[in-house]
Length: 306
Image (cartoon, rainbow, N blue to C red):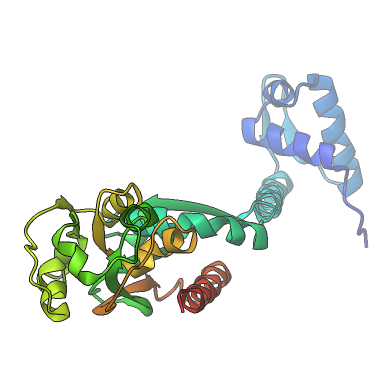
């Protein structure tokens, strides 16, 4: 019983000739001469001891043996193609597509992503900053980080961290005053209003509510108003006034000394950032790797905030 196969080039010549039913067209496809194709096919016929083609002066047709052989050889080449494609794709980096709100992306995620890339160079990460409701399948999204209340139907959701608010300002304002800033100084300081929380929850805390809790009688309607948290934070960094800042989003600026927290109280908002993915993605290795890293970063961030 023969176990060795004919040379691959001979099988390629046979497959092309059988597909075209023409030695000439097969030769053009393979960039060889018709005589070379004929020679390769003849070598297979001699190897098998059967004729694969019925030859006439004007045309060729597959014999019964040739028809069966063509079917199997075609399947064999298809299997080889799939195998080579799989090997080629397995060499590509794993892909991870993340979507998060613009403020969370710029203030929290971006400063940390380089660490994730260093730890996992085999994962190709793409970040899309958006507040829009995401279609995971249609948009090819693996993970969404969303703030506020989430529709949990069909999704895997974990609470990441709760947001809180506390007064913040540039250290330059305190230096200009020449003494520690007190709550009473808010009467003479420009107020910076971050309205992003009210876009999520109309009853969320802002300056009016915070000042009432602090027992301070200050006109809370004056100052600068921003609908994006990162813009309000940046205004405070630039020394434009005192912001009732979101602690999670402002953490990088506080750690870097660009913002100071002159006094409290710090008030929890009851609103959380969430880690969101589809149920089928939750147990994939790439998503689990990112999830574990993300929660480690949150825990480290909480420790650094004290």
